[in-house]
Image (tube, rainbow, N blue to C red; front, side):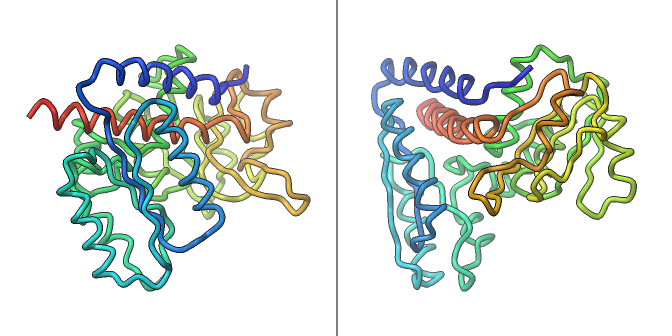
Length: 278
């Protein structure tokens, strides 16, 4: 069965919009875009549109590609102190002369709606999560719709990035699963995947995971999105062969992607509520 990320994300946005109508002020999200990378520009526009759909206050800040580190940090600090803004997101990747880690750490942990600040990652590690990385949290929302009990299940995460792989492993661990983290150089990768009840793949290699690697009745979450030479989009899993084995599987596109932005909105609402309760 297909896990329809578009539909789940739509329902999440509807629920958020209902809550916003009852608030004293609109939750505010600021997105900083440095330069004019085409993919980043599309992502930022989609985030801006999603904010408007649920009734958030949205601030889209475009900065030139040659901005200095000090200027960018100054802009982050301005937003940290702006009472209209509950969430701050700096669109990655940044131009090579900028230190993305320093910029991420400069965002107030209370406004870090990407969930990348070391304080929020630390809370996730301790199972005391506040603002959780959007894509892994979105995946957990999708898994919840399948009614799979993750306690004791063997889960394999392929990919160990700070954005998806590592926090994804912690999400599954916090849910009571037994987790193996792999990467593209893992020995006998196919054998490890064949043992998994749940496979989450975020490795950036089109159709790398083959259907005969998948255990019969497993759940497959494909975070990857790759543009092929013919212009079509593909995930990291060979969907056509994997769907014959999996009991649940996400498509690409229309799977995890829509959940990331919906979860960003959810995090912004969480940050808003935390500020209002102080």
